Image: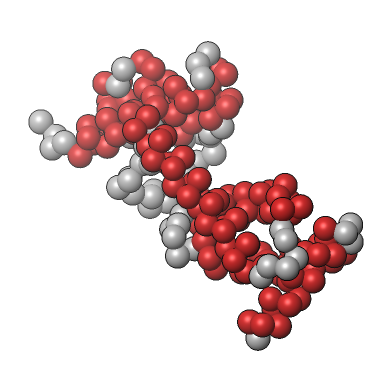
Length: 185
């Protein structure tokens, strides 16, 4: 099976190098699950896996002229895939110290469906907690969560960048959670 695939993929790449777009499309179609299976064990974020797979195919397309038909295809595609994974990992390591997590962990889902934006009635505890937030955080939480605006729309209305709005909202959610978890005095 492996040998048949090697022969088929090598022939597909040679045909692609000679301008056969149908052979190239067929080769790419067959390579998608193979490349994905090579990336998945190394990268656990499904979105990142798909990004890396796309990068592999961009690299393959740009470097297809470098494939030498007298050589096996599997080691070549594996090298392209490995390089894409390494590039991803290096990029993540370089960016990680500068990133702020915007994940809101531990916030329970509402027990009942939320009212439509602008129709939502807030509890006394929520109203009091919102009033304790700094203005920017309160505005971000209200725009996104209670008015139902997208981050882009909320950022435009607040007159700040999307990133700044996300940070304010994240900090606001975290502060609200802390305020609402406090014992009543």
